[in-house]
Image (tube, rainbow, N blue to C red; front, top):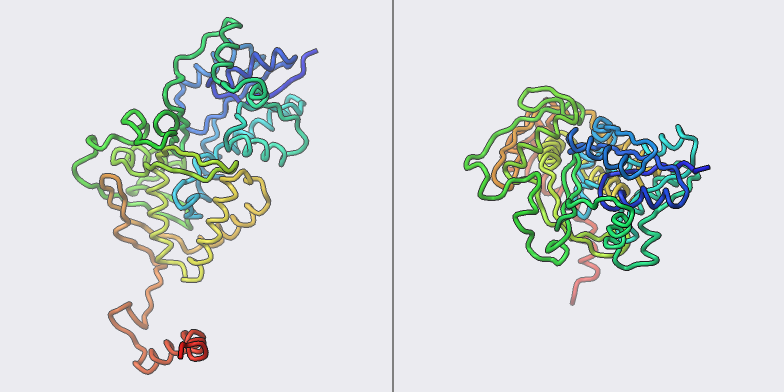
Length: 398
């Protein structure tokens, strides 16, 4: 009798190979495609057809855009942090894929779970750590297994599928593109070789010669740290990002080439495009700067960075993440107001902030006026520099 296994399926070469491979190992394969945004219905249907053709016992599609918004994007925006001060953790959707795969395992009453990650990247760590955080499961990794017998994994996979009479998609192009609601990552070809990415590598962002000639103003309103309207138009969470991806992408906002320090110790280079996140972070940061105290802004920066580091490095289900989010959410009580942004080719600037919570002191205006005296200023400066002055008086060179 076949053993049931749940396979997180994308329709690409790796997971396509996994279905007949697992069947040959005696498994009854149940495939699951978790749509985290960016995948139209037509492509979803093609993924379903592909899974069935390859021999899946049953295939299901699940859309988790709402969860991606509430569980990943809201804390990401509120963290204000980027991995290595550059990358907005577009890989975070992997954790929702694991959560849904675990749910299906429990429904099917099996502890066998498979994924198509290679042994050469970060995703294997994100998947394995997340699965282990949910209990004792038998993690099956066909692509890592065949790396023990071949150095050319792609060719092995293609030949394996062809030998079994399956067509190998012509979609295996020069680039590997991963797209979801958060944005897109593009790698392969000249990008891997540290050369300038070609015009073919643009996904969400327009090419420079296609940028609008005039800048555009945009108003984003927040309530307790959460976006509630764009240009006074209210919408669902995922629709906010979809709207901003389209608008920001037309200006080429949020596109960058990133050479990352990966979890496995290798340097990884790819292009990412995150127009919507870039715009939201710019607006949210401008509002926070105006309404939070200096101590809140300082500590929150540190907390936010720790949050994004945990998420990037595979520890989404580490209890510390929830502890950090508790602080982040609590810090947003006064982060309400409206931010005006100016979109220009390749950049976004927060040009105005409106909020009843702006910390504008009645006792003074920076570099303009103050109610304190000259002697009070001198005394303050003397006291805050006392430790440094003392050190200098003791250790100064004679």
